Length: 306
Ligand code: FES
Image 1 (cartoon, protein in one colour):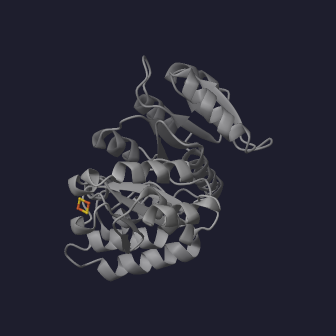
Image 2 (cartoon, helix red, strand yellow):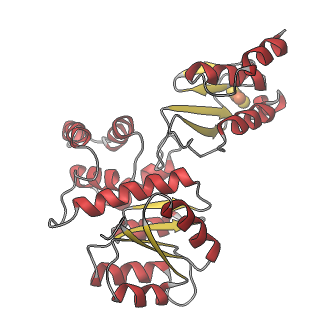
Image 3 (cartoon, helix red, strand yellow):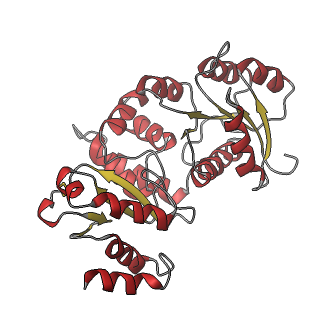
């Protein structure tokens, strides 16, 4: 690898290539773009790429066809999909073809960098061995995960508890983790993926150290959660479904937290916070990270409460 790992970004929208390039080049990755599957194949035939990030929906040669071609001709190249609104079927097809992960579009720099880092680790740990599952994430995590899988191997209905523990151990459920669980429990990857995408408490995206769940249910909406959410997003500079660049916080929007009497409500990790105002919410978050909101927040919260 001359410089950083060489990545080919394949997308028919030039703006996607441009923004991925901007984010990844600044981190030392060697980036090239291709406007479609056909151009990608021509570039890949010349060799030298470590990873391919591809869109799925593209005219002429689409993403799935490109993935199949890569798997057949260059199986050492890691593949990540970048896609807008993937259907479960599409993701399942891509998983079965052996993609490493996917990046939702539009993506934030932190999500893109995170997935890229993991993809690079995958591709580096891949070198001579075919399928050394467990090297894609820290060995201690892999060992703990295997222990949990072993404990539930012959337990009917064991998949959900295993996924719950896996999410606690790894923090989220990327394709490598799903694959390992499927193998360990003797299930198909599609079956595991189906369960992960069905239940909202499972996530395939990395979360921050603290997960902020903002209730968007009717009672909370009527009592002004919208303003609270706006303030949180403004201060953390990320929106619902995203994680801050320093991986401290993630924001999630949920339907009802079962505490409507306290509306508007949010939960941070396991703790519920009710009767929120925008400033009070920031004050609470500041308790987890004093750098959030600036020094004026505490005074603003006090004024608002008074
Ligand atoms: S609607 Fe928000 S807690 Fe029920």
